Length: 393
Ligand SMILES: *Cc1c(COP(=O)(O)O)cnc(C)c1O
Image (cartoon, rainbow, N blue to C red; front, side):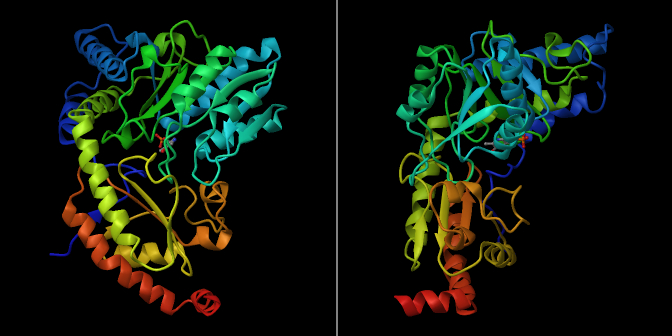
C-alpha cells in the first residue's frame, strides 16, 4: 500500500473521533435551536453552555462568559480589531500596532482600516521572526487604540514574547489582542493570570470542525459588535448558534490538551529529527528561530527550486505539505511572512512548510526524509536557476 503522510496541520487538522461522536446527536436527533424553550432546545442550550465552560476552563479564563463563539479564527480576528477600534473611536484613538507577518485575517483587516483613516505601525520581526517587546513600547502613542500580535506564526512557527508585550500594553493602558489560532494546539494558557485582553481561537486547527471558533474577551471589556442581528451570545454576536460545531470544538480542544506537555515533547523530537535530516541536503536554510518555535513546525527554503513544483512532486509521493499559507498558494507573490524575515523573492519561492501533530509518527518523518532529497535533486536538475547558483559557488 502506498504510504500517505499528512504534514500540513497548520492548514487544518484531522478531526478527533470523540469530537465527531459528540457532534452527531446535534446534527441528527437533536437539531433544535438553542434558543427554543421546549425540552430539546433546552438540551441544545445546555450542551452549548457546557462547551463554553469546558473551553473557558482549558484556557484558564476567569469566567465562561468571557468566551464568545464565532464562525472561526478569521471572524474572531476581525471582531477583536474592528470591535476595539469602534469602541475607542469616541476617544479619537486611531492608531494600531501590529507586526509585518500577521495572518491575513489580521493584516487585511488592518489594511481596510488604513483606507478608513487609521494609521498602523507594522513592527519588524527581524531575521529570526520574533517581535521585540521594546519595539512595541517605543511604538505606543497617545492615540494608540490596540496592539495586535499573533501568539505564534502560522508559517515559520515562531513563538512571540506575548507575556512581555501584554505587560507593556497593560502598563501603557493599551488594549492587547493576540491571534492564538496556531498556538492553541500546543500552548497551555492561563488567561486569568495573563496580560491578554482578547484572544482568537479556531476549532479546525485543534482537531475540531471547520467553521467554528471563539474570541476570548476579558470581563468588563465592551468592544463593539461585528455581527448584528439576534440576541445570541448575550447580545454580542448574532446568529443561530452552531451547537454541533461548538460541542465538537470543546471536545477536540479537551482531547488535544490531554497530556499536552508529554505530546509536545514527542512532537519536538519528531520535528528535530525532520530538521536534522533535511539539513543534510545542500543549500537549504531553516526559516524562523531554532528553538522558539512550535513543536510541530518545520519551514525551510531550498535554493534553486520552486515551491509549487516541489509540493506537486511531494504529493505524488503521498506527502501533503505546504509552501506557505494555503490562502496565498495559487498566487505568484511569495509569502509575506518569508519576505518579512528578509528572504529574497527567489529564495522565498523555494520554501516548504511541513507541520506535524500528534497523529504523526517516526515512520512519517522517515518517509519524508526518504523521498524529499530525491525530489529536490530531480527538480534542481531541471532548473536553470540551480545551474546559475552552482556556477557561482
Ligand atoms: C487558520 C488561521 C486563522 C484563520 O482561522 P479560520 O478558522 O480558518 O478562519 C487565523 N489565524 C491564524 C494564525 C491561523 O493559523
